Image (cartoon, rainbow, N blue to C red; front, side, top):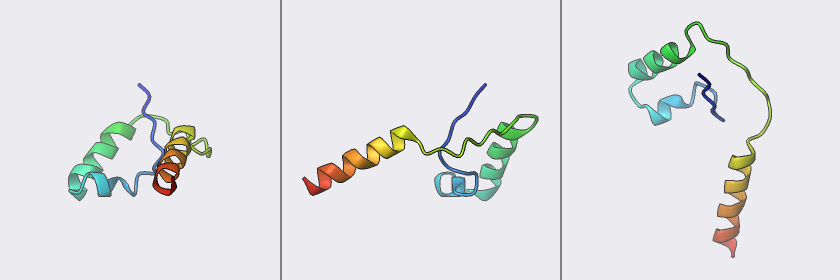
Amino acid sequence: MAIASNESFSPWTETCTDPRLCAAIVHRLTFGGNIIETGTDSYRLAHTRARTEQRSTG
């Protein structure tokens, strides 16, 4: 299984506000797995931000 995210694990508490539940989710997703950080920017995120910015200024 592969899971992709453009956020590191620390900001996940903003989405999942219960710290214990968030820790449990991260633990279950990462236990025995390999974390690969590409260090690249997300094309989709950059495209969405540009489109949103264009709409607000246009």
